[in-house]
Image 1 (tube, helix red, strand yellow):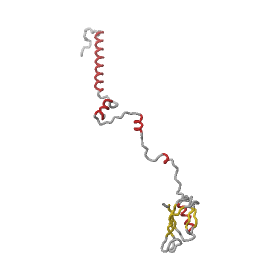
Image 2 (tube, rainbow, N blue to C red):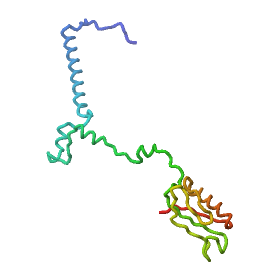
Image 3 (cartoon, rainbow, N blue to C red):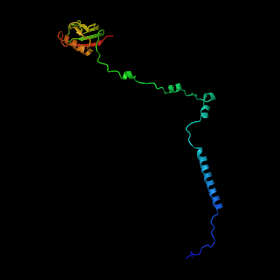
Image 4 (tube, helix red, strand yellow):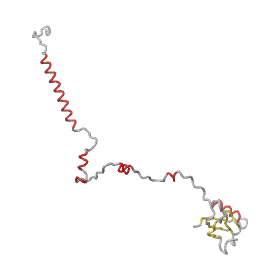
Length: 184
């Protein structure tokens, strides 16, 4: 076993104030130098928000570069913020729905009438249909159709007028077929 009672009998001296102060100063200087070195190395890689004015101007056409530099003014900013509108205008989008194709006085109509018999009332010999072209709706809203008489066209759609003429002709010829078109 080792004798632990034996200790060095040399007197231990407390560090003097001068020595403690020097060690403390040296430690601080060492820390400052270390922080300074770290900052110096990391400062090289710090990000920037963009190029400097000098770097921008060096790339301008006036200085032999390829970039056109435009000084920003109110008119330039307005022009840059202009966005063309594509699609339909608000007037078009907010417009009401178009009603049915209503016939009005002055409209020009065309009628095609087919009869289900060989020798029809309106058709020529050997023909099964009759074409009535350029029938103008008069100022009172009527058109004249042979064997149907005056028919009120104004205020009706072409489909409604077709039904009226078919109904009036059905008493004159069996199963008439009528087509109403707009004239050109």
